[in-house]
Image (cartoon, rainbow, N blue to C red; front, top):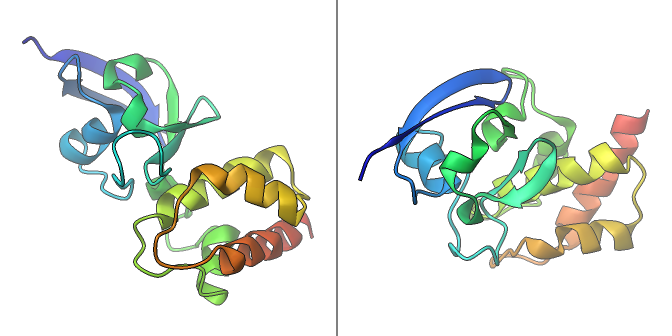
Length: 157
């Protein structure tokens, strides 16, 4: 099968890569581009571990073909921090111990950032609904929700 050439923007940088026509964006990120922050949890779009944004829209990268991102802007967990400076959500996840094994954490962080970009002052209920597509198998969601609420407060001030 002929490999497709894709040019896209990932975390603000123009990127070119080759991929199979049936290769998922998740696979291309991890295998072709060596961006392993985005995790595979289920491969069926049910767990949210592979969440990224494409042109500002939150998606499961396991459900998107890599060839579909031609000319689009993708944001992944690798672009969340500014060099050594963590994003406020990343800081609050650490402060609130809102992670354990870490498989779900990148996807939850991307989803939470997407929420806060749309709604800088979400309620606890809104956060829970927004993050409902992200499954954590290690811990409850209380610390995660508290971290997002705390980050939102900090980002508003």
